[in-house]
Image 1 (spheres, rainbow, N blue to C red):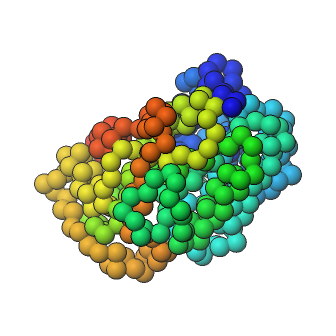
Image 2 (image 1 turned 90 degrees about the vertical axis):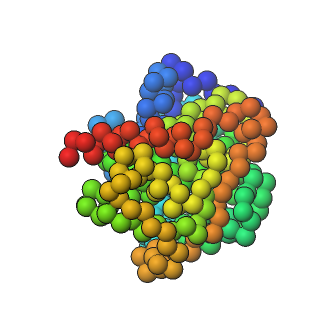
Length: 309
Ligand SMILES: NC(=O)c1ccc[n+]([C@@H]2O[C@H](COP(=O)([O-])OP(=O)(O)OC[C@H]3O[C@@H](n4cnc5c(N)ncnc54)[C@H](OP(=O)(O)O)[C@@H]3O)[C@@H](O)[C@H]2O)c1
C-alpha cells in the first residue's frame, strides 16, 4: 500500500483534465492545496498545458519533468459514435493512452488512477458489482476495457475506477446526457423524446472527485465501481431534470424505445449498465450520494444559466 494524502503541496499530474470530470477533479485537488499539473489536447483553460496521451515520448517528458506523486488519467474519446467512426484513434487514446501512462507510473513507482466505464458490460444482467465479468459491445467500451485490463494487470500501484452516466461540468463542458437535454430545451423544444429501455447509474463528477481522493488516500489498490447511489432509465433522469428546472408544465418528456434513435445513436449500448459500489461500501470508502440529490445540486447550475438567457 502507498496511500497518497491529498493535501497541501502534493504533486498530482492529471492527463485529459479539460473535460467534464477534469473540471471537478481539478477543483477538488486545488481546494486541498495540491500542486497540480493538468494537461489535455485542448487547452481551453489557462491552467491547462498541452499533453497527448497517445505520444509516449512527449507525455513521458511532461510527466517526468513534473515528478508527480500521483498520476490521474482522464484522457479519452468518450463519444461512442465518434469511436465507431474513428476506431484507430479510439484505440490509441483509450487503450494505448492508458498503457503509456501506466508504463510511466511504473517507471516513477507512483500510484496511477485510470477511469473506466460501466459500459464495459453487455447488459445481460440487471446490476453489476465490481467482480462481474465484462463483455464490451462497442469500440468505446472495448478500448476502455483494454485500458482497465492493462492497468489492473500491469501497473503495480493501480486504481481502476468505473464510472456510469457522467453528470458534471455544466453548460460549458458537459458533453453528455444532461447537457444534450438542456441544449434542446434552450433551442425551444417543448417535447423531449427520451429512451426508457436503457438503464444505468448517473455519476456526479463532484462526488466522484471526492471518492477518487478517498480511495487514493486509503492506499487500497484495485478496481472499484464508483457511481452515484441508485439507478434509473434515461427517461426517468430526463423527467427529473425537467422537473428540477421548474419546466414540467412547459416541456413534455415522452418515452420512446432505443429504435427511435437507431440512426443517430448507432453504436451498440447495453440494456443495463447499472453498477453497485460493492467494494467501496464494504471498505467504508463510498463518498457517492444518491443520484437524485446530486442531480438536484447539479441542476442549479443550469437553472442559473437558463434564467440569464
Ligand atoms: N462521460 C461519461 O459519461 C463517462 C462515463 C464513464 C467513464 N468515463 C471516463 O471518465 C474519464 C473522463 O471523461 P470525461 O467524462 O471527463 O469526458 P470528456 O469530457 O470527454 O474528457 C476527456 C478529455 O480528454 C481529452 N482527450 C482526448 N484525447 C486526448 C489525448 N489523446 N490526450 C489527452 N487528452 C485527450 C478530451 O479532449 P476532446 O474533448 O478534444 O476529445 C477531453 O478534454 C474518461 O476516461 C472516460 O472514458 C466517462
